[in-house]
Length: 433
Picture: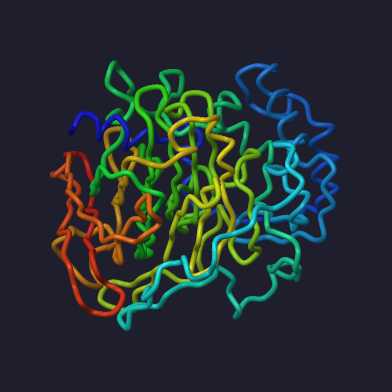
C-alpha cells in the first residue's frame, strides 16, 4: 500500500534552473493594461525570449491568445507581483473552451463544513486586504460583481518552461534541468513529504489549513513547498485528482508569499491538468478569491495563527470547491472524461510536500510537527463526504517517508469547537531527506 500511496501522492511540477533561481519577490515596475498586454502578445516572437524552439514558443503564444479570445476585461490590477484581470463570469475560458453556456447550480450553503471556526485562530474568508483596497498604481484591487479575477497568463512566465506541457504539468520530467530524475518513480523523484491518508469511497472532504510562509531558496535548488488536500480516483495511467491548498513557489508566482492554488489531472499528470485558471478547466463563480495570489496575513511563531477552510464536494456531477465558507467554483465532471473522478473519489490525502534537488525547503511552518500549536503547521476539522452525502470523521494513517526532514504528529481528536480530527505537519527540510 505504501508504494501505491507514493505513486499517487506526489507528482509535482519541476522548473528549470533559471526558474528555480527566481526566488525573490518580483517588483512590478509598470502597470500593463489588458489591451496592451494582448497587443504585445500578438506581436511577440521567439527571438524575444529564451525558448526551446520557435514551435514551442508559438504554441505558448497561441495558448495565451486563445485563453483571452472574446474576453471583455472590466479592469485590471496588480496583486502580489501579478496582474489580475476582471473577467465576466460567463466569458471565462473554462466555459467557452468546454462549450458550456450556463453556470452549474451550486450545492446548498448548508453542505459547507459546519463548526469551522476556532477560537484559537483567525479564519480567513477572503484574500482581499480591506486595508489596501487599491494596488500600487491606484487600481481597485477587487473585481466588480459578475466578474472573477483571473491571474494573467504571460509569455514571460510561460517561457520559463521548455514547452507548454511543462507549464501545465505537475510531474517531473527528465528534460527539465535542476532536479535529478534518474530512474526513480515520479512521486519520489525530487519530492519529499509528510502526509496522512485514507482509502475510502467519497464525494469529497474538508480541512482547515494553517497558513504559513516557509522560505524557499531557489539558489539552493529548492523549488516549492505546499500544504494541501488531494482527492484521488483511479489507478496507473487512469489516476485522476482534484487538489487545493497553499503553495510557496517563487519560480511560478514571482513572490515569496504562499499562494492559493488548485490543480487537477485525469491521466496521472501525463497529458492533462493545470494549476489554477491556467487552462480551461476550473469554472470560478466567486470573485472574492484569487487563485495564484498570496494572502494578507500568515501565521507567526508563538503568535497569531491564520487558516482557511477548503472543501471539495462532488455535487450534481461537478467537483465544487468551497473556501472560507463560500462556494467558489467547480471542476466540471466532464473534464474527467468518464473516469473514476466523474463518479467518486477513492482516496483522500492531506499533508505537506516539497520539491528540491540536493537541498529541500521547509514544509509547513518549518518546525517539526511535534512543536505543536502556534509553532507547527496543522490541518483540522478533517472529514469526508460518503456516497450517501453524509459527513464522516476521517480515520487517517500518517506517512513520513522522509523522517530526517519532515514529520506528522497525530492524527488526534479534540472536542474543542472546530477541531475534531486534526494533525500537525511539516519540518525544516535540508540535505538529509
